[in-house]
Image (cartoon, rainbow, N blue to C red):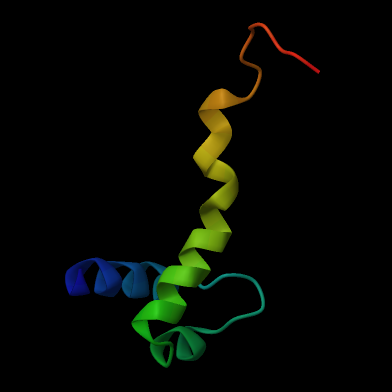
Length: 58
């Protein structure tokens, strides 16, 4: 898991999210980095379900 965190750290240091600097990313804990990645990509979790046709009960 530590390797995964370091890959994320490198990804965000190379291209920091808006409002952050690479220095901010360097000083983040592993948990903070994972949380940030989750929230930045949370919309992507359900992309494959958008527009699925089927039977819906409202």
